[in-house]
Image 1: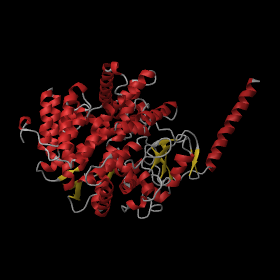
Image 2: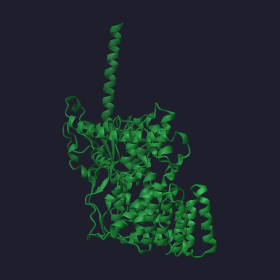
Image 3: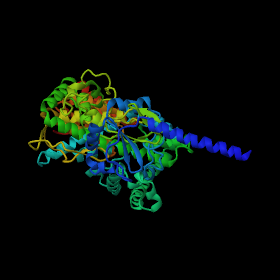
Image 4: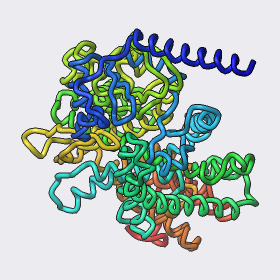
Length: 620
């Protein structure tokens, strides 16, 4: 009986294997480039990683929009058309929601537990929910909008200071933009700046060096990713050692940030809820940790912070640099955008983040920039969790998906003159995506959750640069050669000449004074918008602002008697005393009422009598 069972089992197994082989032979598989070199496969196609997007376009032009590659022992599906992308990211969205297990993702990505590299499942879904509802929700971004405003204003002031110091008015724009995006992210994450001469600390230097090392390996494959046997032969030790060395320093840095914020929260235990609106993102995550410590471990928090830094800094700064470069080459588009800003915003105030939604042409410029130069020209790889069909071809389980976004968004079959900069092509387009022909932040379950944040930073920064400065190229021709790293970069960094717009100079000076005032006033953020309105109403009177700064400083130094004198002195010096006195009164209304009262009465007297203070209060 046992022998019969074994016989029938063997017959069944052989039949099953033969059937699968026969069916496999008749299944339609994607075309494969010739030659496929034994062991290496098609790795020879990747000999120039910096131009991989263009190399893969040549492959697609010859073999079609759906191509099967063998990268060593890893089966790879190359997709280069919108229709095939739709098959992958819509019709087979769940099947391709996984990520391949790469060595760098395991080491740097906390053993595949970050939102970028976690396998599709409960862990990833929880990460996505946290990102959507706690970290990058419209509500959270709104609460932290003052950080973005202050950093964009700081960028504008820094460029203006560059000109004021008598240096050549030519600027390499990328370092300034990278400083901007890093400071925005670090302030949102941990409430501190890491870039800028004023914050040149050991911690800042450590962060800069670490960030460079991280970017160098952030998107890199290693030989072990394509040849699994390397691990058993010890041939991938050098690459793993380099990753681990960076990870040790990275983990220490992130843990220090988490511990620092945990300490601050413990110090504020007696004031729970009073400053909830001002919590940075680590503090928000630590709050969640207190409710579910088994899930929200420190490693989970550090992984979320890591992805925010990796995806929210280099990419945004590169997008802005490309946009400025394109506007320098196309002054008619620059002038059209400037006109739109002046017509909506006016010339008596600076552009605000909330203005961006009312500037459709600026939005078209950003979309066209991201179409021509997507920040991630090759989307992060996906992996199929089961067999499926793409473009009519059978795709086996375990296939790595490589989606050439640059090819899709520059496809001449879809886009009219794709190599030409035409922001107008996005006018009157419903939404940001044009099917699967334009998806700069990906699509489907694995699309970038930081899209809203990125569009705010890029739009607000670009709008401010257009409004505040006149730009022109420092060279006869702007160089547009690109290379692929973590994002799409310019091979030759952009150098541009600039000149501040005359009508913006006083407003920019106001920003400098207001930023100094914020150092003295704990209530500055709460009253900033009202202060801005008063300053613009007073026509940005420079002398008045200097005096109002003196008023703030006197109070913060504890000289309350001098406060009364300073308010009157400010009003006397200013050609707009009502505005300055009102500014002083506004600031006072947010500090101690006992100190407030007599000074408020004096301000009220100045406003009512509208007279110059007598000699006892000071001289001009």
